[in-house]
Length: 201
Image (cartoon, rainbow, N blue to C red):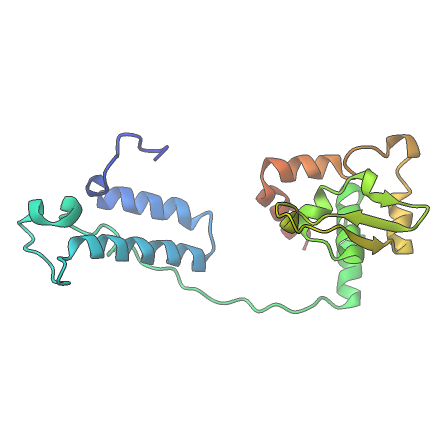
């Protein structure tokens, strides 16, 4: 809609517009997500082009057709080949190589993830106020459950390796986000941080 504000109705979506949308989506989403979008649009247009009895109306009689759709611009959009990717756990050696290849906030981010098991958003936005070095624990309410009334505080022991990395930050700087640069990146757009992590791997 933002790219073509002049288009208000489904019947105004041409083959060229459908291909433009598909091209843009192809560069931003995985093959599986791309295919889901295209199949959905195909089915939506096909359904609206059919009569209540499920029969295609006369192609020339578009005025009687629901939404007055004369053609389905999504039919010619080819689906992408979707090759499922299997995942496995990293070996200790591989994990060590990944962590040793980075410095600064990225190293601390990976360490927080490894030694706490928190999701990316919770790691990136971890606040110094959640870290208790005296009691040796981190207390956070995971973002996934924080929006609900039953969101609970999770308490995680601080691993000695993680504690050592966190204590490298001078005490007078331990306020606000533990990873201010990466937190700002995540808040701007989570995929920006995800992409940076993927480059590390």
